[in-house]
Structures are given as C-alpha cells and as structure tokens.
Image (cartoon, rainbow, N blue to C red):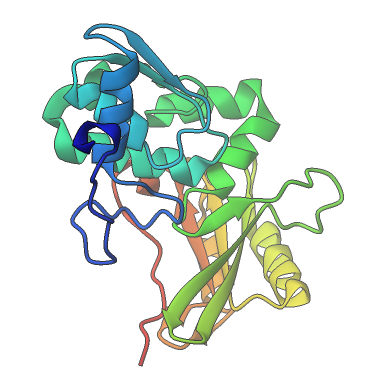
Length: 233
C-alpha cells in the first residue's frame, strides 16, 4: 500500500539544501522520522548531528532539540544553517563548549588551553585539529583545499593563546616546510600581533596568489574575515 513507504526525492548535487557536508541527508526524511516518533514541544536528541539536518527538521516541526558533534567544522556548518533559515534563532541557542564571542575565546584560552587549541586550529574552512596534542612538531591543525579536479593545496595551522613573537612565526614556517604543506595559518589574538611577526610572515613568500604564511586572529574569525586562499587557474 502507498502508506507503507515514503517517497522522498534524492538530494542532488545542486540542491539548495546542500551544505557541502559529505553525509548530509534530505530534511524531508528527518521530518518524517520526527513526525513518526515525537510530538510538538518534545525534545529530539542527535548525538552525532553533523551538518544539523535533525535540528533543522525539529525546528521546522516545533520540536525542541539538542545536537552534539565533536567536529568544529560541523558546528560551523550548523551555525550557518540555523542563521540562514531561522533568522534570529541563533541568538537563542545555548552553544556549550565553543566560544560565541572573542571574550569567550579569551576565557577558554586561559582556563583550558588544549580545548582552545583544538577549537582555534579548526577556524579555517577545511582545517581539522591535530589529534596529537604533545610532540606534534608545531602543527596544531591540518587541512586540504580543493582547487580543481585532481589538484589540492595542503594547509597546516598553529595556535598561540598567549605570548607571541616573530620567532614563533619563523619556527612555524619551518614546521610547515617540514610537514610539506603549501600554506600555513598562524592563529592568535590580535593584541599579540606585532609588526615583526607580520614581517616574518611576509618573508615566507607567496604560493600561487596567496601568502605562504598568514596570521589569522581570533578577531578576524568573529568579524567574518577569512585567510586568503589560492584561486584555481
């Protein structure tokens, strides 16, 4: 019988729902599951919420929700999704474990340096925090940026939550070279950046049309600025 099965269109590569997340499913599928197993104002929990499809479906259906994910980039996709579909909802979301402001980040850096490092290492799109926190060779994050079919740019990052100087930038460039990465993102707070540090970054040169080493501050992230990335020729 028709009622024994669901007909939900496959989400194509050009679907407006697409968030660029590899395991994303259609929101209509999650809405059907939510309607079949919950009522309005119930709480829906997704402990591996990925790009937030469960949360999106729950919000559409007037359910309360809790989402959990270990991946910082997943959380960034969820933020983008909620802001794009539900206007001011983001201001009402209680986000546990990730800073929502520069002051939050400053507090985390002082109270839990390793958690701050994992978070800040993943601020750049495509970058993931290094799971190894000690003896990491000065590399706190790894990433790969697709340029065109069969062509990628390898990136690394380093995070400093406290004191910084030009020597740190120079040492990071050496670690980048040792790792065989094309680009390096040095992340810290704006107040810690000196002219000498910026000069050290500039001296690392250019890869394609992007600086090889870039200083990316926590303030840059919260103000929506992104590092310069190579443009595919």
